[in-house]
Length: 279
Image (tube, rainbow, N blue to C red):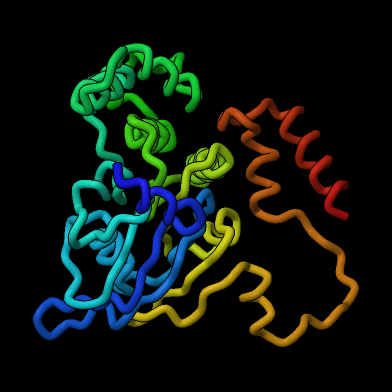
């Protein structure tokens, strides 16, 4: 691997400058610029059709830009596509697992395709890391949405890529599964992986991202931390209000950490406790 490229990526993992892309008369990207710091979570926030997936496809070398430059881990996506692919992993909007195979077999298969030693040991380590050990021998078809997505992300991490692209990672998931995936993404960054996350969910960007770039009609209209973006609006008017439990508070009080409904007594006790703490 090119040492110069690796050193340049020690601070900036992804750099995008003036990227444009059109499909005939449809101008999808109109000059996109941003940088992603190594080891951080960067959220690309935008509505459907804003160009998020197109940009991810360019950064992962699946699509060529019409103009502009982009480097990933110090490698130019246009001229060093092979090096870029060795440095990244891409998880699409829908889990790409083989439902006929067990969770463990899915992981072993990817490890073998990457020509890694001890694929069984790699699979077992990832099952433990993503809390899937007990389900490892079951077919992936029996997994819940959250488990399937965690398995998908685990498969993406085989080979320890320093950068991972997560394109709409919680699309179609129920609230409990979304929280599970959020916890997984936070742990990835904590362990040093750079995460570029695309999402259309405001709460997802707010919960996860170190920096948020808002992509609108093919351009980045704002880019900053959550606190910096909030400063774009007038200061909040301070008034006394009685805080009621949020829907998330109620949901977690009812289902607990396991995602299963507690007994009636436990349900009532937790709901009452959540209400007391929030007052």
